[in-house]
Image 1 (cartoon, one colour):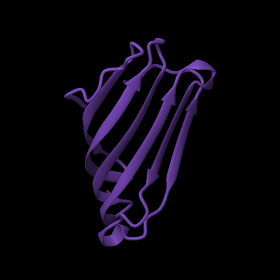
Image 2: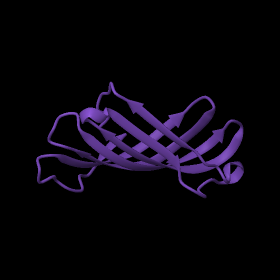
Image 3: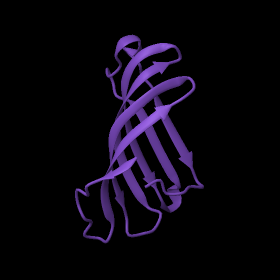
Image 4: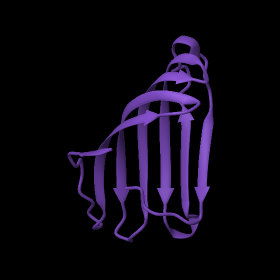
Length: 114
């Protein structure tokens, strides 16, 4: 992940930012992805939120194609960390056409990702 230019400055003392995403996956998903994230860090240390979209291209359990993931994440307070990733409907191509899926990561013990 690489920081991109800031799109806004928080009037509340928080920070707003953008990051490029470039990942390589190994295992059941052998692929690369590119995308972009928007994030907001509150003035309270450890509290943040983000949204992101990334396109994944490669092979999933032997099937070749691409798909788009949408991310939603919140961190801080008594909620710990909640991260949700979901395949964008109808974004699958090639042998991954029709792919659906959602993953949620809930963790009370967390460290800031942003």
